Length: 244
Image 1 (cartoon, rainbow, N blue to C red):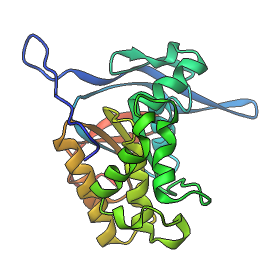
Image 2: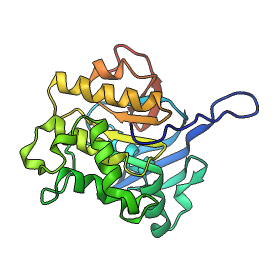
Image 3: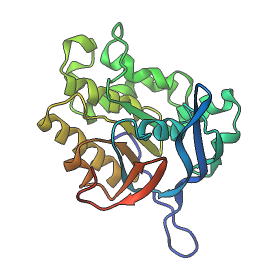
Image 4: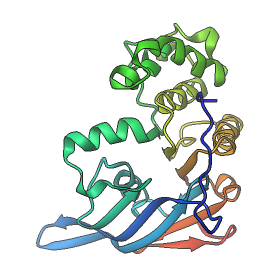
């Protein structure tokens, strides 16, 4: 799925390389005369090819953390190093190019453009990439990979929620990024469809993608390689059970 598999790179000691390095990240939101610390001096690493879940109560900072990882939001302090690039030092123009090339994002609410067909939605990220000359061909292949080739020319409003999310996953894979970030990707889906979407993510990890998923679904969070718990502005390793 998603074109080419990504070869997992090892360092001289035979260890997987670091895909994500978060160093002393702090995120502050002004609140009148006070300051609210959504994240406070957070440190963690995620290795290439890992499937990591991010959990925590509503308002704990999970989505804030994911937005910082994607470069959508900037930390108040600290460094965000993704696949060897310190994105906190990039200009907005370079950051936009980097994001289009290096990461795919899957949202809870799909974020598909209703006036475009499914295949046209998948083609969008390829407008300014190395795939632009064959964007329709590649988009059709990606839709085939997620089981939606026969609905390529349908509009989003005429397909189910699960099919919308499959389309969003295909779009996230458009430029063959090494890192996929998903924010509550099964939140609007029934349990059976959620399992199908999770299986797609597992397939991506077997191909060498690194997967980071914010979720409130404990069944899904128990199936990932590792779980990070966001609580009181901190990010800690969580046990597989009893974390929510």
